[in-house]
Length: 185
Image (cartoon, rainbow, N blue to C red):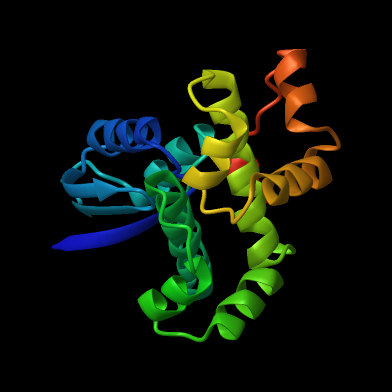
């Protein structure tokens, strides 16, 4: 019988590969794996308890509550939207996708994570900006455009508010102080 596992802290393709390796090593037959979700069948030698322990050692966690599952799915959806450049009207899009109002999603997220959904999204965008600056392939206006900011000055103000320095200062320092996506909250 297939089980669906929701996994906390899966935020990139390397996470998918790591979780897949862990499930396989623990004797599970994996049907599919994507950010935050694994569909697998328990093998003869498989143990849910041992799987949880091994996942925890690598920074992952099986989510058991419905609220925690929703929050993790919301995080994954936001990360995917930012990665794909679909950040225009992001909260309306999420509300529609999850079948809840923007207010309900925001309250649920804030209560669970201790940070507003908007602040979380801004922090993710700022980490994406840091990545773009580090890669050096886009100028500041192009970065702002790629993340659906109306103006580059709006992005510049947010960047300074979050990091305490301007984008130019960050770029000139060359000290790429970036957070991993699972450490944003």
